[in-house]
Length: 333
Image (cartoon, rainbow, N blue to C red; front, side):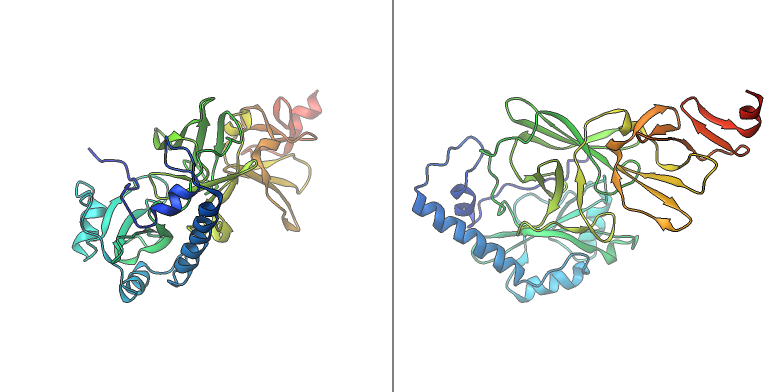
């Protein structure tokens, strides 16, 4: 059975960074104010040192690996053994990457690679194929010291209940987060026929998922962030930020992707994942959250002013609350 792609909990020399701000699960922050200030400074220094590695998102993994090796990091071959039951992991090991630990079968299919330095720090790199179709050409998605991002279990949950989000803007890429009244949190990825658990545990901000992503919640939005707290890019197109609105499971979540028209005009409406935009003969306009729309009935949506029907295969007509009405039907009424 394939085990979940997960982050390993190992002792590292940056443990002071974790303990300073909160916060291992089940512990209370009792550090004096002076120590907290010192540890916060250490956290900034750690983030700065990671920047000095020269890694960039979407750079070839081979180049990133060479940089790490030149700066004293070595493949980490202790701890959990590679998940050789996974075909992708086996191929990567055979390609000469003994540092690979596991790969995920959901989303972008990221793989986790681990390195260690003389101090015992564990450095994690997450990669994807990014359209190459081969494990020989993997690209960097995210990176950082294992457990180095300070998680605060003292952070107040921004909501209770269930919210949905979608970083990739397509079908079968939607995810959800449920926060219980006691702070217990579950994050799931929803595919076409099944869903998988990416995280289950106490609420923290950010949250490290089993796919190696740090998820940061800010108000009604959620983002994938780097070890230094910057929002990552490239989830839904080059230079597009990896962020999404958090929305409730309303009928809008059931609106299928596609193109919708009112009829009688050159205007149209495009739905893609958790967002939509208008277009006309002049081009496309800004994206808006899908939660602005209401599903009136199958293939009919309402934007507060007009009804829009899924682009029909029949004769010209207009979209109504009852559905598409052809010209002949309209004239006969």
